[in-house]
Image 1 (cartoon, rainbow, N blue to C red):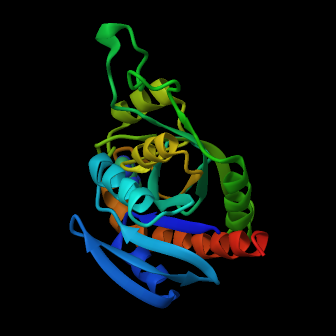
Image 2 (cartoon, protein in one colour):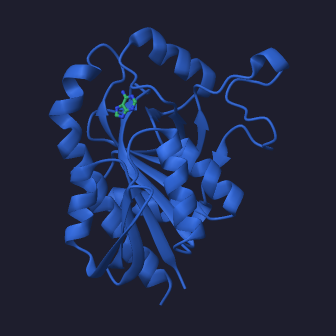
Amino acid sequence: MTKLGIIGAMTVEVETLKESLENMTASTRTGMEFYEGKLEGLDVVIVQCGVGKVNAAMCAQILCSCYGVTHLVNTGIAGSLCADLDIGDLVVSRDAMYHDFDCNAFGYPSGKVPGMDVIAFPADETMIRYAFAAAEAVNPGHTKIGRVASGDQFVAEKELKNKIIERTQGLCTEMEGAAIAQTAYRNGVPFVILRAISDKADDSAEMDYPTFERIAAHRCAQVTKTLAKQLKEANQ
Ligand code: ADE
């Protein structure tokens, strides 16, 4: 039976989803609160992982090892790396890679984690399809499918933004997705990342982020609910 782990980056987003959770029980591990229950009739575990790759990977592994999730979705906000992606628009991951992982000195290409057989961790085709349909239902005509570029940096400079685009060809940048993707990949758990654009990851990012984070986070929560509904219907 499907059990969806939902990893949110922000309080506002997790709170919105929590309000819709039925038969909720809560438990704490490594300082993170895990909320189990039914969202749109689907068994889910919702958790706010905190910022950055280590928090994200820990959280995803706990969901796999301790809560037995069968699927993972990471939802949150991101900086745009693409001129066609404006604030409020949505990105569904085709795959995810690190923009700050560098073993070039040993001949590895940028982003490649030694020992892994891929540079970018591929999202699940079915979850991509459902996430895209859910995003289109909430905000028609404003969703792109592509690469998510993750690193332990809030990107707020044009120069860094351009370097990340060159290294990754990503559509958006954030701080957790690829770590969740790598964890899901190693556990054989299908995943997708769903992000709403809160800023342009350039010199305007520090101003735009606080203005738009709530709007973007709410939009993501709406899409995640719709995704849960679709997964439930597909499993009936
Ligand atoms: N999340 C939202 N905007 C971001 C940015 N510009 N850089 C990294 N993470 C983000």
